[in-house]
Image (cartoon, rainbow, N blue to C red; front, side, top):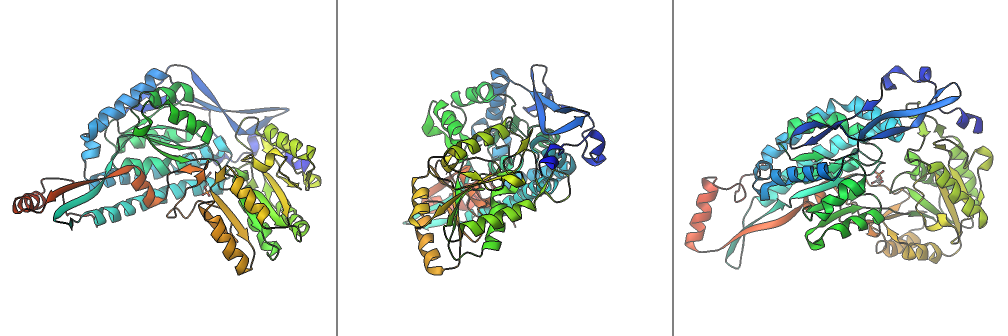
Length: 540
Ligand code: G3H
């Protein structure tokens, strides 16, 4: 295995032509006020997690993007504010039907860039070809489902409510300027999971791509420009302190949609001078546990836990990040887990059936090694050391299965966001339950076993600690129609296809006492279509 890892990176000739980058992508373009502008200032170099071998040397430079400053960032803000124009702008006053048409046009244009975006996902974040394609297709599907959910919402809002002699119509209206920032592990999907619903509901957008996974947005700039009125979508690039701080300090951001760490989210929230005016939709870190009961079917459970812990190399907020196994089956479980693990294919993202790929964050292998050393100091072992567990070469890190893990170790509480699988042996079910209760995180948990008495009781305890309890299944966000959220430091607000439409809006109503005059005014406005809001029309 070690030899395989040492030779994981290809030479230029070994890369299939369709996946080669013909030259580095020097992106100077950014989108502000409906114009593609060209940056002439300082640039940020982009390095791929995939190294190319030239004899004894390795190279991984794949391009660069603008390191914008306060001036450009505030320019993007002015543009978004002007486009919103206190809710009187073209975009926010458009009918829902018209906005849907613009989004459909965007999807049409976006689909023509699938191949380029998928290729850049592989090069920028090391995601496998299959998972990169899935990320793109899931995003397109999410947008189409959002359109359907909006039609549904619109149908429900196209009626009048009469109560206590008051006639009213209630609809959802936009909030203003939304700042969207997605994470590096789903740079396309999780940026668009907030950007698209915010947009379709009539808000205007400033978006900053994550620090890794920037260049893949470049092919979509033209699609944004062509599909939406000027200033409705604006992009900023650069270091957070320089471009995001001024935006938050301006007090003019109405919604912060951020997927990343709670530490950064807290800093950003505090920068806003009037926090009560800021609505936050946050997807943050997690340390989702699996609890394996003594009657679990070891073979299938080991497979599911392995997937849960290693898909995209464990770089998912929903990944299983600690596994509690009943002491009676812990040895058999570890043996099976290591057997399954040894069958996973390692390689660069386009290799056939590859599961484990290089990691994009700088110095990530060193960080993971530190966690392992710390665990060893307090009594853990790398159970798969002989098959390469914990061994790394540059950005490729082979998963380490650590056992026995205890509370003295950093890995017990710290979110590794990478391929380390810590295993804790327990005797009493209260041990994993106490772990969850004391955790700073509260996103999801997985229970594996058969006994319905135990599982039933565990469900009732866990539903008040986390926001999704999975039975004999790994933790995950999808299907995207399900609510995705968390307690404590794991999230603020709920996302799903339909929830997202709600979080980027506020319920607003028009109401009138049920007098003859008011009835005739309302009837006339509706019949003569004198208002977009006050209307009984709906979209099929
Ligand atoms: O990184 C966090 C993602 O929201 C996880 O999503 O469960 O679909 O991989 P996923």
